[in-house]
Image (cartoon, rainbow, N blue to C red; front, side, top):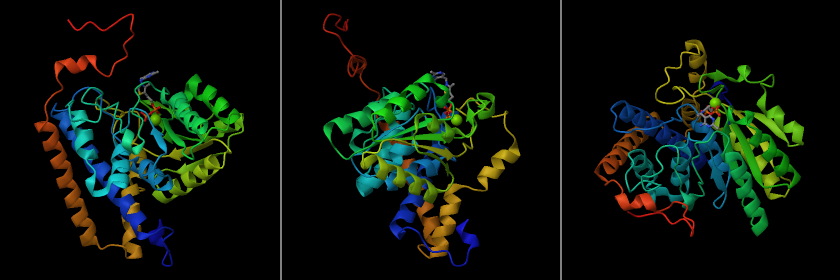
Length: 345
Ligand SMILES: Cc1ncc(C[n+]2csc(CCOP(=O)(O)OP(=O)(O)O)c2C)c(N)n1
Ligand SMILES: [Mg+2]
């Protein structure tokens, strides 16, 4: 950690460190609250928390630009919060809208019809939130292909879990993406488990980034607990994509502190393993760097924490006070074929 070195110099500017700290803290507090509300049965259905993995989202946000597309799995609350804070600043209502979606309210990001696994926010380039494991991988390449076809300099960053890469769609997509030099960054968030199944139990290949070699895709492992490392690797991959050189495969080594979803007591792993990752906590690492570089004081960071906690409570209030969607909404935003119109009564 940077705090061990007396001569450590910041690699990035103050604004970047403060954004990392604030966005990761928002995600952590938001998710803690979501977990609590789930326990109280105020949030129902599926709910997968991003606690522990915050650096993977926030570090990539600062390495990319507006116009780029983002796609991920059902563990999708953190990214829209981080993107909203980055691009909308003070105006941002992402905490309210994502929380309202968890409550299935009409003010949610998907009008209360998608729930926790299907958060979307087109304005900041966030294209979901996908419940089918690996389903977002070909969609991500398709988004990149769209950008290539239109001749923009945008790219798509496509996140997936370590379980998703065992799907055939992963291999087919990597093959075509490299053949067509699509502007896409594939990111495996390796949190070591797919539900209760460890990486070792699903393949001999446990250094997941190595899978890219089969398709000649430049690939590398990244410390996913270190937001600076995430930023640097993503920036390098983005440069490659924008130059027309095609995809990169990054393996962010990370950890989820909580169970897979809300009903998982996580008995398949040891306390020591969990503690070893908590000791590399991305928020704590960033805090130490901020203090060391003199970008803020302990008191200022404590005040920020207080402010964020209040913000999350405001989001809960907003969600609770919002109405449920009208019954007629069941017939909107769904596919309808002319020959088979949806019957309204
Ligand atoms: C095609 C498909 N198969 C199975 C499931 C059930 N399922 C939901 S999450 C999950 C584990 C995926 O783990 P990983 O890709 O490592 O992502 P993580 O949850 O760790 O973020 C499984 C098997 C599903 N949603 N879709
Ligand atoms: Mg996993």
